[in-house]
Length: 213
Image (cartoon, rainbow, N blue to C red):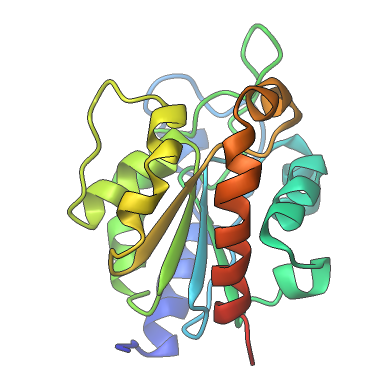
């Protein structure tokens, strides 16, 4: 397993946490609040949770998945809060580091467009040790599948991508595509019982393997 120095990783994460591009020189509409980039990384974590963007509750606390979506995700993974937030074992990197604000319907806006081209390639070059990537939602799936040489069909839905999860089981690193664990997806979970019956047991086995000390 190839690793890089903690110093190099510390340097780029410090720059990310100090970033104010979306507030000072944004691409389009300015971030509607003070930036608060949220991520958790270490040179030892073998499991990456690649998510979309922090929600409002996460923005207030600075703790990723510190909300009902996080409770559901921990249940999907079969881990408790202490294990989930052990950054030596589990990294969390969203596609947008700051809460993007709400749209006119009260839903979260997409991840800010400034983050991915400015930070992600350099960050993941400093994090080569991941054995498994849990790609949550289409933004994370598009980026990580393409980054690892498995570009997804442009018109594929999240449902179609998640349904193909077995096809990615032999990839290096392994990629688990998941829907977002938001309450907004309760209907999706009811319409797709195969997810709970087939995907989650396999996910829990893989997570348990990776978090062993």
